Image (cartoon, rainbow, N blue to C red):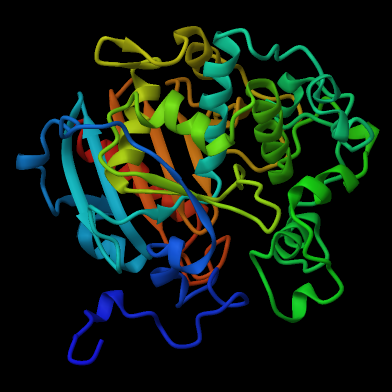
Length: 397
């Protein structure tokens, strides 16, 4: 409309398109405007006004931590590491809330693979009601996947990423399964997608083959989470986004609707398409810390959360691990194996929920790293874990 001035942080940047939105610098805007970038389905919050998170009115907007032997402002570290939002909950109270880039308290931010953890929590609720049995196979619920790489595997195999599919999660390779899925969904366009038909997950996933020697060993695969979402839809007769709304979002007292990207065939991208506000992501972390309970409401079975927290290290761990730790992966969550029960939800480009039972703390972090693994000096997973440790240490003294 003529005469209307749009704030710089809300103006769609030039050059943002299907080939560029995922990567820096344009992703900083795109991740906080996902419904303008890709088709999305709403994950509805409950009716009425939910109670605010305790401590918001007194939460710090900056704080000092020890960084590489010297005091440093958390706000400066956020800027250096492309962190768009950081929320820290200690003993049930918000003690820090900070924003950068184009994120605000009311705006949603793409969660990437933190979506997987929320999918796992939704599966826990459906399993508690007896609508799925994690010891049954994918083929038992979705006949269309019987001949796929996942068909003979149990749901427990999938929840722990120990299935036998031949999925390739190499983000840097244009011909990897994860990148071909992006192209097939219509979520990524451009030269890297030449020759890949846009057909959507309901057709793409059944065509993924099997690598039997993998079954039983942990190999990270995004498509595995999308298969679980398909199973949940088949078992309940409901769209996945509606299951998340009814079983998680409305019961944690979410402040805002969340959303999830939808592919060309109407499949909701459970592996990495959810977008939510920082505060509501913090609520998810607090739900996990509270062993599935929100106030007096036992939203999820406590035994499901206890099972994640109490696991021992994986015998087939494929990554380097800090000395003295025994990391593992369980029910779409990362166990640090630090002897303190710390677990995390993680997503590329710097998304994180850190749940620390021993410190009674939740750290939610939403970021826009230039590429999936970092893409800038001193930006990436190792530095992010260093920042989490600095915050937890500062607030535990």
